[in-house]
Amino acid sequence: MTDSLTVRDNRTGQEYEVPIADGAIRAADLGKIRVDDDNPGLAVYDPGFVNTASCRSSVTYIDGEKGILEYRGYPIEQLAESSSFLEVAYLLIHGALPSKTEYEQWVHDITYHTFVHENIKSFMEGFRYDAHPMGMLMASVGALSTFYPDAVDIHDPANRHIQTVRMIAKMPTLGAWSFRNAQGKPFVYPDNELSYTANFLSMLWKMSEIKYQPDERIVKALDTLFILHADHEQNCSANAVRSVGSSQVDPYSAVAAGVGALYGPLHGGANEAVLRMLKRIGTKDNIPAFIEGVKNGDERLMGFGHRVYKNYDPRARIIKKACDDVFEVTGVNPLLEIAQELEKIALEDEYFVQRKLYPNVDFYSGLIYEALEFPPEMFTVLFAIGRTPGWLAQWNELVQDKEQKIARPKQIYTGGRGLDFTPSSQRWA
Image (cartoon, rainbow, N blue to C red; front, top):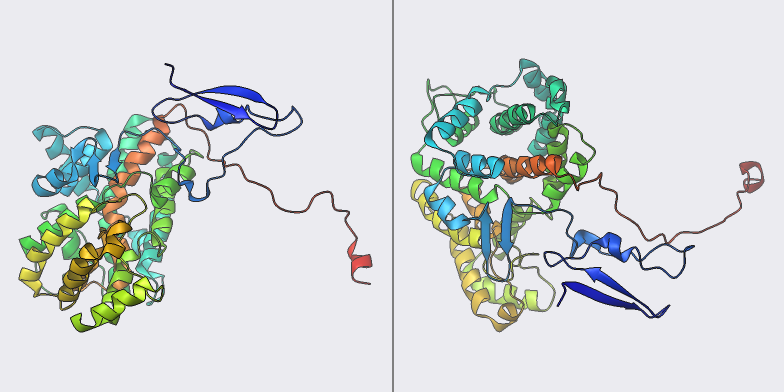
């Protein structure tokens, strides 16, 4: 038996043999199916790319039915438990875990590049006091392309490597400075004696003390959150990075597109919506009425369900454990009790079980961020810092993939045709 699909075109009676490879058929093969030479071939209409593969990738594997997430073949549970964010970043970029020497060099290189050009500081100081941190991050990441014009040489592996190091190193600095701008506080320079995540916390919170020493439990929890956000296959922002990157633009411009995609409430802003929902519920006593509202279509259950996962999001289980470490330092977020009761009811109620609505990564992450005193507008910035290695791994893979072309989807035209133009002198007479 050959791996192929036999398609019969009932318009013409003709049959076509379409090869199947890796569980997919090539859209171009469907394009050969046509009524006659004067008409275009068959196209696939797929808004949102619900069932269209745009690339071959070895970065991230997801099995939504079984709740499996792996980076380069390694289960997310093992990485979150035993690895560090920079080690995971190395894994995503290079495709293999580092040796001791490789890891030490990787950490050194990223630490060395955490500082940004002083003109970037002036650039960011030009934003209004109420500028959204995510908008500032998007603009400043794009601006980096003007500071590193050599980044356009994307086909040189050594050049791609140094741009990758620069991007991962500078994202926490840009993210922290966008936060400080909103706070009206002076920008804090990187402290290269601290770890990657501890340095980020220092740039966020340091005031008059000579040296800022964050609580290691907070460092570990935030490092874990960065790991969980590091990549997630062909999501909206990864697709944006790949689509813009397909024009062979520099990586800073491509990643800026990813930041822009993550800015949207349907992608990076979901955990903020969870917090708003929990605050609106108010107390455990109001949960039954809220659940009824969801069933009647009057309320939305935020933080449950996922486009890919039809099982418990593996990242949600890990974040749930991270909550304990954070709340041990900060005190328990009063919304946690509501969240836990809501989860308990939703997992037992047949209405939600039938619809496979399980908690996703956003359900608990917002509680941690709020406990750490981050304003909601910073949530997506934290997400972007964690996601940067994934974006760069996707971009690196794209650049080296000889099958890739500039992104240019087809459309189904629905407008008028063959209209006669009437000059304005007649239309306005």
